[in-house]
Length: 387
Image (cartoon, rainbow, N blue to C red; front, side, top):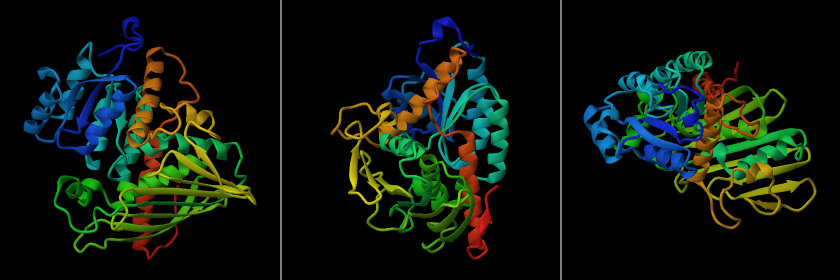
């Protein structure tokens, strides 16, 4: 296993492995691109599919060495941890039900984990994974990629600086239409199977993104929620639409809508935050713009890396004003923040305070959100506390 802090490795690219994300998986390609954008990682090993044949085929297509293409993640974790040049970090991009076991296998061997959301498919597994992560010397990073957008960092900074005053209202929505009818391709098949996705459908797949984004930007802590969830497509076993009311510990109130049966919406993630002194609005499909309205004044446009943007946005922007920057770059910012933390571990130094990424605790809160939505809706939208 690689030893932290070896002088010849301090500035070398991070040796990355991948679990899941084979040649027929959309999100695997996204993670590989994101890891390469800032040149911090090199993919050197993988257990890329749940079937050995597809795992081997995918590994060869990606140019991995034959002896570093594994049939399953347990074999990969064992072999790589024993190698002098073994992986330092692993990206887990499998269906939700595999996250716990795969992350545990690597964390217990001191290998950093970069895991897709939601954290796990069940609350019990989420709580166990938090315990494993906290006992490990390795880092755990959850890829809530929308937190990497420059204008989201700008909004977070403005709220933290008090530009909106005391927060009163948050409204967040994430609407798609791709599951408006029954689908039979791979991405839809596992996401609508509670054995693999968990009890939440749209709440787990996109609702957790919306919930995390609102929490990341505002810093508000959820106290309780009331959820009305539905499965509109006949025979569907998980929700495809949810309306959720949120009560925060500060006294602020929120509303969250997530839907995968909203025709005309491709990937409509929107956030609005209102305080006693002003409001902010942001839309993921037009991510380089943030609208700011001070109370009683005209609406102002803040652009990424342009007029009105501050240091928080600038440090995660790559290209000049007016050039669009979006989904892949936002994902890459999470990978780059993770790289900075991993490299700090190599140097046995403190991580810079500006480095921000979602943690295992954020993941646990997301799974608690899903669990609370399901329980609330089963009780006729009764209010459920979040502990």
